[in-house]
Amino acid sequence: MSNQSPGSMPQQSLFQRVFKLQEHGTTVRTEVVAGFTTFLTMVYIVFVNPQILSIAGMDIQAVFVTTCLIAAFGSILMGLLANLPIAIAPAMGLNAFFAFVVVGAMGYSWQVAMGAVFWGAVGLFILTLFRIRYWIIANIPLSLRVGITSGIGLFIAMMGLKNSGIIVANPDTLVSIGNFTHHNVWLGALGFFIIAILAARNIHAAVLVSIVVTTLIGLALGDVQFTGIFSMPPSVMTVVGQVDIMGSLDLALSGVIFAFMLVNLFDSSGTMIGVTDKAGISDSRGTFPRMKQALYVDSLSSVAGSAMGTSSVTAYIESTSGVSIGGRTGLTAIVVGVLFLLTMFISPLAGMVPAYATAGALIYVGVLMTSSLTRVKWEDLTESVPAFITAVMMPFSFSITEGIALGFIAYCAMKIGTGRWRELGPCVILVSILFILKMVLVDA
Image 1 (cartoon, one colour):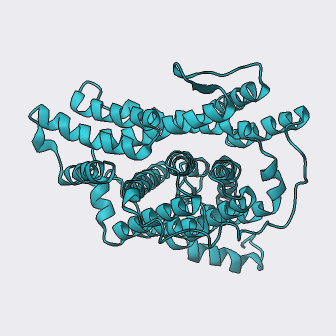
Image 2 (image 1 turned 180 degrees about the horizontal axis):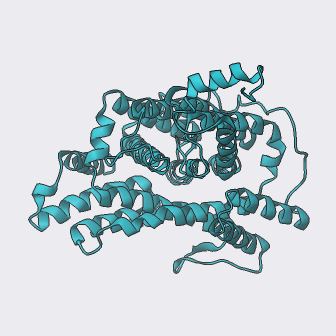
Image 3 (image 1 turned 30 degrees about the horizontal axis):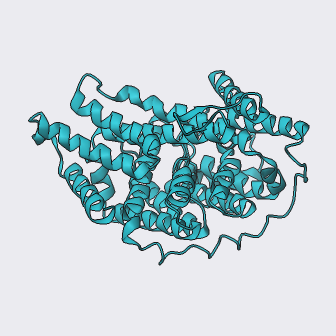
């Protein structure tokens, strides 16, 4: 005789029918716990993303809400349409590129810059729709993919070091060490080491713990004013509907739009392959069940997110934390999405977080992203030189676009110069020519 209560049978049947739990060797309880775990590892984005985008002049409270909304929308859609344990939220790295480079250095308004994010997302959707996305992923050399990922990591880490005051501008040496007698400097460093130590001890909520601890210290020091915990979500009308989609159709922004599209393409696709590999459902070529649906969800979420006024959306590698404890279906992603919806009601806490409290998270993300440099064949200079140029030129030129461009051009130069031009694929040649034309015709 079954121990299952009559009232729970329809519920179990519904979950089984929608998510096929038994076929994936999991249960409702396991999926819910996995969803909570994934959420705890990535909820830091609701504090970090508003901090970064506010530097571009966007309303921090409104961005907090839109970050929660798009993370919920993308994650729930991923669960329902693709039935995969992959959570989605605004991308780290591209938000920094948006705020510090496109708005800060290039001088565009955030409305126009967000329009560039929108067109990059539309381009990604078109590439997905016509299956060109698969061709690009398969034909971009590993060294360039690693260089792009690592360069963004270095760029993000530099922003974290700057926001905490650990490094400062210097007219003689470009940069120098900050003044550690200022408490924001050592609090930024403390936040990073809290994350690194807790992560090394396999504590999933390491980033969240660091933000909470450093914010509480800031509260004790008088930097932070406590304004409550719960409230109704603030209005989003200061960002929603404000994106200048047509104004961003500027030839001078073509490289920026291409960079948003290309980085999001590699970031999201690579993350999905990594998560599904961890779940044991991808094959040796990196393909996995319902891959087409997953790629549609992430590209559509990027379009929706930029239209709402938040940076490019991507799959989160933190999803592996939920997978590691048994999450195997879309129910895990739906739990994450529901938790992001509930998070909208703690907006007063988001407004309390000082910049140095999120700096440690930026530096830590840099550590994770630059670790992929170990995959480069350093003994082969035709591979290692382009990877190196791509990675270092992003922080040194303060531009993800220029780093990508110089990396592709360097790859062609090294292969042609060493007589190995046959190793050049049509995709690399095409992208390199487009970047050269941009430099000659647009940047001149």
